[in-house]
Image (cartoon, rainbow, N blue to C red; front, side, top):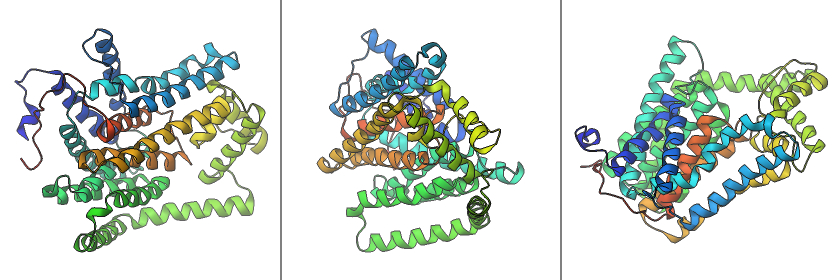
Length: 426
């Protein structure tokens, strides 16, 4: 492992990719927005490298299909602004589209890395992120007395990106890609899960078991007989540990949800977490019906929400999204925006399904699993929160789609060199 920090070695393109990948997978829950600077900076550097002829554009079919869907979504948002004569007003809202626009060039540069070393980087960095996230969560929960938000500065975002790191560790544990370190992966997944509990983010508590089931189904061939029994016992043990650490938090958050529901049903009280979400959905649906085809444009969202709360609920409340990713897209860019946003996830799911059907290679199946856990986590969280539109979440989604697509079905691009990263067992 000492070769990971080979300070005296020259910075070759492949070695730069190693450090870049480590930051991309370690930093989201621990260092927060650093991941946005790293990913976007790497993407812009890729544009220059391709333009100068130092990199080739890697036009893998699965990547190109996903690029078409991503660019269609970006175009739908720009079209909505044109239709509302709001290009100047919405210009600042086009900045979050940058990570999406960088998808194909980031893929082209990232794919010079050999697949097996990249998979190991993903696993090692995610494992470290889980341990680091728990340390931050403990400090924030017990010393600062707040919901754990890691380095993200937002409990929901922290839990969402940490969920991905946890699921990478779960995948590594059950897939057998590094059998000698299965215990370390399990411990990391457990630490990350406890940190998610400390975040108090209920929607990710739902996403976690769904993603675990998906990972087990993908790797069901390895879970037979004694392996299955050991996994069941392990899951039971983990559940006991989680219950011991998080019972008070879990029961408190679920009790709060129950009280919100009672207050809403019996008293019509919308001044709660649940009540505000339902109010936002009502405001959003009415705004969508007013302009269903192209929407109101991105800049109108805060005004529509504030006006809706004032007129419909007599409350002075403001948000910058509708706590449902597809509803936000419907209001901002109409049916076209929501359809193209859905297309990104549909195409990614299709790519994963094809790769899963056509390959038995463990590295490629690992990449497929990365896509699946990203889709599950984002779609589940996006039903009651942010789907896209946050710098960390947007960058992390692109990171998982880029690397997952390459590992699952991509071709290695020119300029790849033998990596300095040894296997975990080396």
